[in-house]
Image (tube, rainbow, N blue to C red; front, side):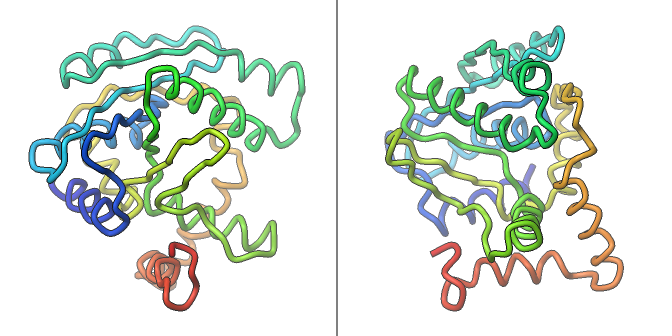
Length: 236
């Protein structure tokens, strides 16, 4: 976890993500990214210059029976209170609405449910497990499908909810997260979403893999450009 903690610490310091006394809700999907973030934030508390509390929030989406016992045990072992919210978001998106492009609606509904759950337990800050590749893929999606230069920001304040979103893993390569999750034997759940692996985001991931075959440091270069606030103001 040392490399992950290095990336996390740098992002927190660069963007002033965490303040003393924060109550932070970590959105847990059951995947490698969110569980690695949860573990890293618990470890970071041991040497962080500020004190903060961590809570885990997990949403079930109604895709059959999802066993959460291993996630519950993991959170108990690392001393993080876990809130599980059962929803029917999957049923709404895939059965009732039968969306041809379900990811956008699903993401909006999950965000709303997560933000409401965070406010219910008194958390005004929500940590998300987006990593370096997520930043790049979002940039490519915006460029090719929306015709604009854009990606999500490291810190985002939502005035309608009075919630601040933070993304402490934005510097962390996905390969490092995958390796760390295996070393730590994190209780990763299989993604039950019917669209898993067949999304536009997956296409951007494959496109970036192709580019890296030609330009090996392409990911580092793209992230460097996106974080260049003097020129592009995306992360200003």
